[in-house]
Length: 287
Length: 301
Image 1 (cartoon, rainbow over the protein chains, first blue to last red):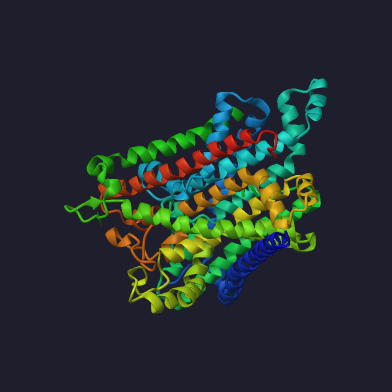
Image 2: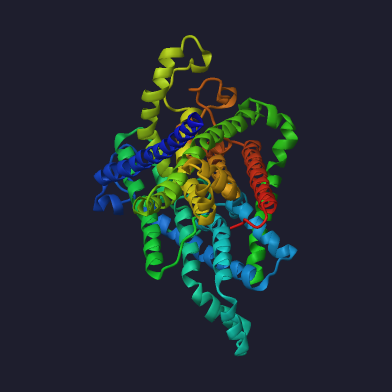
């Protein structure tokens, strides 16, 4: 009896220690990423680095100006397409659709869409936009990223809208307010912060995407000229810099990584502070 | 308007399936079943031969390692955060881990290439090579840290933040009465987790693991940086330290330099295989989870 209970205690100890060990391991590894990016990245930061276009390969000159500009343009455009479509589809699922075949399949297939590798979406954008229009373009990149964004926004919007109490909608109906006004002024208004959460989560997700961009915006050393031409982006620039055999290029890569991480974590952190102040919870499922 | 937006979502998926299917038709009629079983990859005109087997193996094995490493560590973290730590420790720690889930994978790749690769090389690969390199062929290739083993481990690290955040959330959603009942029977902490928490949270944990697997299979740029980018039969992992290639990394490496329509179609064919693998996992996991939830009826969160 005594031996049995001491064995149980031993197992308990072992499991507790391995749980603590996994935490320590994760803190070391993930902490190392942040520390390396900050230390190595800070070294190459300068006004020129942030604003200049890249110099000739191997020259050690120039910066990542076009990449920062390109990321803002492509991600901005993708959000301008993805956020409204995602929110509208979310509203449909939560307010208009029941559990019929069409809404259920929209739910099911948006979940499938979330799980698709982004490079496959890149291939599709390449074939259907780049090949048919004849050039790499900002549009192709933005549409590819919006396909990644939409299903995330759809599901988060639906979940948040569902939580709005029915009594609020019923109050609206009893006053004879038309349904679209109820949705616009009552449901969306009270679920606003949740919907914004979904959008920001999705934006921070697509801002770091690299694979679909190779096939759509291609990357360039020049600043933005037109929506139908190629443009640069931060993740793409990091990839190209790292693949060059020069130490300065690697330092530039770290610098670009620092800027990208600041953008993404800044969004995320801002969102969480907002969440904290407004007192709502953020689910991680959609992230 | 809203129904149009919902239809747009479906339309996009249909477009993806159609485009990939249509684009890969050429290679499937050229290679037939050999596309899945062949190991030769040659895009030189007149000698074209495209076999995807090495990359299918490379994809499955690297993401297998990723799940084998990432999921247990994530579970350990989730158990620590939800069952062991006081809220003074667990609140900031969960916050940081959730933030890390937003770090783009290209940054994991950068770190792996310049920092982590050398840890693996010096702490694991060189000692193994020096000890067994001459006697066991599996350790017989001179390691550089650019191989499927490193790639798998980095993918495992990459999925830790998201998998552990979801697991923690799922485990925290288990009602306290479950824990109290187990403790009142004299269960130790581990026994409580095993008999009261895991059964309740298993569908959520499985979902998290599947999400991690999906991320690891589809990850592209990180893999191209550290897997060594071998081509053809050389990409079949024969040694722990041999360079390899995954479906997605090969697409990324060759897509912009595709030399002919057939070559392009072969790369799209790789995309089709990737699409099929992820869809099967995704749909399978969803059916499994919904069945499990039905079986343990009433305990869905």
